[in-house]
Structure formats: structure tokens, C-alpha cells
Length: 517
Image (cartoon, rainbow, N blue to C red; front, side, top):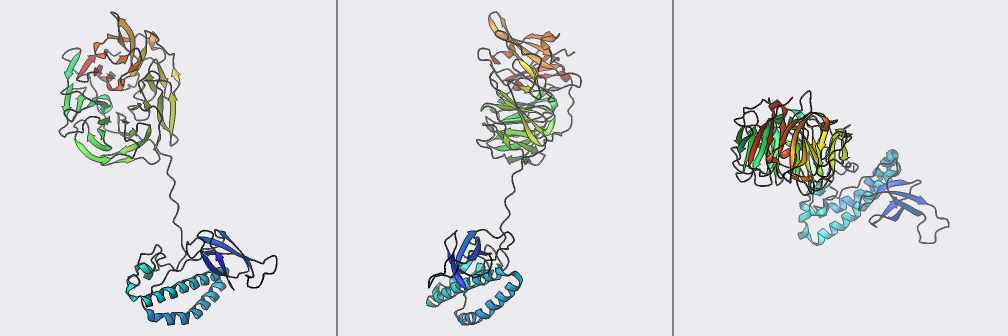
């Protein structure tokens, strides 16, 4: 016989029928699966008390199928009430017998749900008879006519149309991927040749000061942004010519990153792709959703993809760049680390990235992919830049390998501080790099410059001595040992046998010959 029970989830009271064993039934109100079990009381019940103790808990039996919640039927016509009431007994009895034969205890739960539904139907029909003008919801009962669980008499669309089958919960959302593959895309190789200099040094004035620089074309092109002219410009090392874009760029603060045959600019989280070296705009797109936006980005100068971006707090991701789209590589989003003033730099081959600052005590984070995950190595090297082939990292007072291990001995000290800056390209036989060494000339601290190719002991190597270069003035604060971003001011290009310098005034390009050995 039926006995009232209470849903522990929503406190809804509804009847359940006696069964010999535990069974699963959904709550008619909140549809939570409940396990119900009739237990004989320890002592005979008093008169008027239920003959059994009910134990109700949330959740379904392991081998049970949840009994579907029957949909509410429409009440379009008051005259069908007698017919429905007279036929309920036969329909319910048949349902119970058939269900008991197939499903056993689950059939009882189904009968109880239909019983509850008919009770609500009678109540709703009486209300409609009293106030027929409120029957608009019934006549337009789209959700109810389709068997929707939440359609009801108000005409809402059901969340489970055709509610005769079991309620299947939606699958859980997939877990975000934490694996990715860093796949540099090599474009059309740009040949580099030694230019003919009208003078040594050769000076090319810029039409306006620049505010961003990147190397492209595997070292052949130096790409820059001229905010006052709202133009991009490309300096071709082979021809010593400067070409400006026909289309306007964004204003001050525009970030740029260059690759083999394309470049990317970023401004207010809008990424714009351009071709190199003709600077034709290809398309615009919205950047990734990073907290506080994109603060820095980098691309290998010998690659066309990927692009690495990061926010001011080091939250970053890998972007796959094509001729028609930029997409975040799934599984690549992570926290890179590094300080709030840190910038991204890339090896020319796109296999090693750095994030670090230019103060002497700022550490550098080395970023690479290992076994489909980010590999981050924190190095004590500051003012650091990766070599073109990603094998070495050059910085203040030392050289490291790509695994963070120091090569040779640290050098420099008071009055003889030393910085190393790699060439923008790597030849098949040598890794050339610059050594900038503090010196005094007429009681003024300045830098002497030399070109080396021995990472183990550059101090004892017979190097190419370039002497004191006045265009390097202001690039180092000797007291605090802070520097400008060297990768935006010094460009040693062995194949072209030149050193390209952009002074701190950022209003000219200076080209010097280097007798490469």
C-alpha cells in the first residue's frame, strides 16, 4: 500500500508503494534520483501509524535505471475530465502489471508518478473550469503538448521533449587539454648578402622615431613601427633601403613580431597580420583573452608560425598563425613566470623563447616544449637573448646553454661589467656574438665592442675588435647595471658582414662593416 515519503533534497512529500526490496524513484518535483527501502519497525506500530519505516537517501541503486518523470499533459478541454478519470484505473493497472513483469520494483515507481500527475491534473482542470479566461497558457501549451518536463500549463517549451524515455543527464564538460605541440613553420628562405656601403659607418635617417623593432626574414629585414606616421617600415639589409607600408598602422604602443614572410602587430587586443617584405595587410582578428591584455609577443625570424604572447603578469599562450587566421593552440595556455616588466624574445628557429627583464638582478625564464608540455627553466641570467638556433642564451656577465647550465666562467665586475649579445643568424660553422665591455675613456664610462665565436672562453679569444662605438651611448646604466633591450638596438648579421645599430634616439639606422673571419 502507498506510504508518504519526503525528498531529502527539496522536502517534497509524495507517496510510494510498498516493495520487498530497495528501489529507485525520482522525486516528482526536483527529479533527483532517490533510493527507497521499506523496513519493518523494531516494535509494532501504534494505531494510525505507518506499518513500515521508510529509509530514503539520495542517489540511484548501482544497477537501477532512473524512472522517468512523466510530462504534464495539456488541459485544453474541461469535458475530457470524466473520460480520463474513468480510464485511469485500467491504464494504471495494465502499466503496473506489465512493468512488474519486466522491471519489477521500478514499475511501482512509475505508477506512483502517474498517480501524482493525475492529482495535479484534476486540480488544474477545476481551476480552469472556474476561470476559463485564464486558459491561454493551456491552449498555447507548446511545451506540454510536446511532453516537455518544464513546459507546464504556461506554454513554455519543455527541456526534455517527448518525455516518455528516461532522463539522460548531459555529459560532463571535457577537461581542458594541457598538452600541445610546438611546431615551427618555416617559410620561404630569404637570402642575405653583404650590402655596398657608401661610407663606413653608413647612416640612414628615419622619417620619424620608432617605438618597436623586430627582426624578420631570418635576419635580412629589420621591421619597425613609426607611431607619428602611423606606418610600419622595413629596412632591407641587402639593399639598405627603407620601405613604408601603404596602409596606416595603429598608434603608439603597438606591439610587433616578425617572422620569415609575415609579421603580426597587436593593439588593444586586435591582432593584425601583414606580409613581408611588402607590408600588405592580410586580415585582422581578436587576440586571446588574457588578463590585462597582451603585453609582449615574439616570433622566430626564420618561421611563419607560431606566435607567443603573454600578459604583464606572465599569463601566455601559443598562437598558430596562417595567411587567414590566428588561433590559440589548445593546451598551450599557461603561466610563463617572470617579472611584470619582462619581455618575450624568440630564437630565430622558433624553438626557444625567453621571458625576462633588463635589470642586472632580474631572472630569465627559458620556455620550450618537452614531451608535449611547456618546459620552463629559471635562469639567473639577466638582459638575456637566445641564439638563432636556440642552443645558447647570452646575457649579463655570462652565457648559458638552452638547459640553463652556465658555459665557461662568469666575467666582469666593478668597472669591467660585461654583456653578451648573440648574432641574429647562426651560420653552419659558428655562433657569432657581441661582447660589450665597460671601459673608461677620458673619465667617462662607455662600452668597447668586440665580435666573438667561442662560448667557452671568449675573454681569451682573438676577437674582432670594433672599439668604442659612440652610437652605443646611453644603452647601459652603469650604476644600476640596467640596459635597453639589446635585441631592439644591436643586430649582428654575419652573412651580411655588418653590425646594424639603432641608437637610443631611435631616429636613425647606423650600419658598420664587420670583417667576419
